[in-house]
Figure: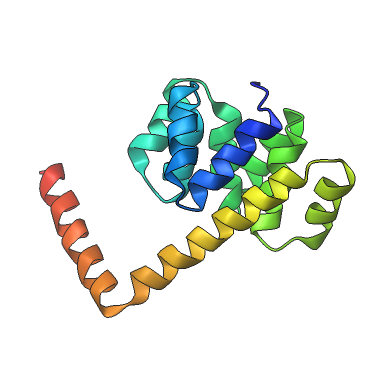
Length: 148
């Protein structure tokens, strides 16, 4: 399992908050897997495939744990990726996970969780607007056409 410094997680948080400086730092410093993680959270299948094919299993499990996959959460716990497991739980509204991260000196994961949570809510709001529904229908048709 790869270790991510506080600075790397801070840059990931900046990227999740739409800061291009965070994106640039991650790209220029070899953290493409964190960029793919965020894209996978936002339902980019190619990004998730990238995580799996490049053996970033902890990050892939983090993505799935965000979406209430109990096996993914168990994988994170078994892999001793406690910060990623707690971060996923914070995104899902677990106050005790947030408290754990703060007490263990990992508040940067709390900030990351809130940034991701904010973007998930933005995406959800966008998907239920009239224009978002129409765009999703067009994307569905495009994906269906690609399958044929």
